[in-house]
Amino acid sequence: MIRDEPLVLGIETSCDETGVGIVRGNTLLADAIASSVDQHARFGGVVPEVASRAHLEAMEPTIERALADAGIAFSDVDAFAVTAGPGLPGALMVGVAAAKAYALSLGKPLYGVNHLAAHVCVDQLEHGPLPKPCVALLVSGGHSSLLLVPDVAGDVRSLGSTVDDAAGEAFDKVARVLDLGFPGGPVIDRMARDGDPAAIAFPRGKYNDGTYDFSFSGLKTAVARWVEAKERAGEPVPAADVAASFQEAVVDVLTQKALKVCKDNGVRDLLIGGGVAANSRLRALAAERCEAAGVRLRVPRPKLCTDNGAMVAALGSELVASGAAPSDLSLPADSSLPIETITL
Image 1 (tube, rainbow, N blue to C red):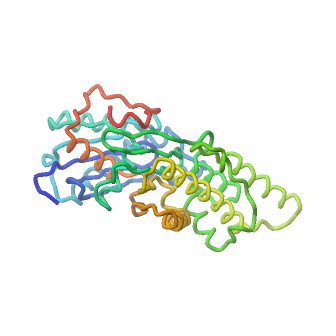
Image 2 (cartoon, helix red, strand yellow; image 1 turned 60 degrees about the vertical axis):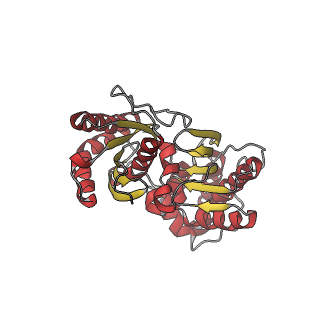
Image 3 (cartoon, one colour; image 1 turned 180 degrees about the vertical axis):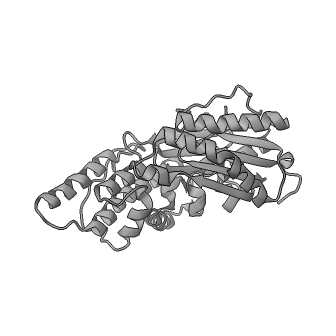
């Protein structure tokens, strides 16, 4: 850590987690999170208004916790960064409004950043500067994207995305079919360890279609129909086998497409980020296939894969270091912010 590097505080409120991170350069000093997932669990998914209210209540104590963890005062912060999009409109507005207030009151620059680019940049806190270029596979509840990243602070290009359900969304819906609760990703990952991934031949959507796009809606429906057929026949549903076979279908397509992007673009470095990147089978299969293909794999530790303020602070720090102009205080919250727009 270099002491004269800027101290950046990042705020993340794109969905159901209030995240506040503090970094100096590429060194993580604090990563405080307040999650409202328990409030959404009884509804089987995130309720936008509940999430917005939770952010309002959690913002100040989460920032205070991050400052205490970093051992700094508010006046020590050199710049603020905040997720400006994409995400839930109301949730984004809470974070953007808070960041504007803090930046204005302290006379510090503010950077409104792209949530997806932040998921890419967070790996720098663990593994150092990103190779230029690299390929990024971002998989979460709202996004399944393949990106070419020549420069995370200035040039991120979308090559493929989901045409229907994102991978994380499919995990949640399959968990609901199996009555496993919400969120579905962690519980399916755990249950799949006791199942046979080859037990059921679930479909691989858009597997060899020549594009870099994803489709998981048909897979989710196939799982639901398979389970319903078992139940109609009065037969027990082998939940562990269903979980393992479904999970294998998802990670098979994700890794196959990601390595196709690397090969087609002559890139030797693959980064995987987003909440689904915490999935143990995805990490294992990606490592296996990358080694066979001669591709270097980078995956942050699971806590940095899910939504957090550290990733926002990391991208803010990168923007400061690159000399990017700060955002204006008229900065909007853009729920559909394209990945090519790294900062507003």
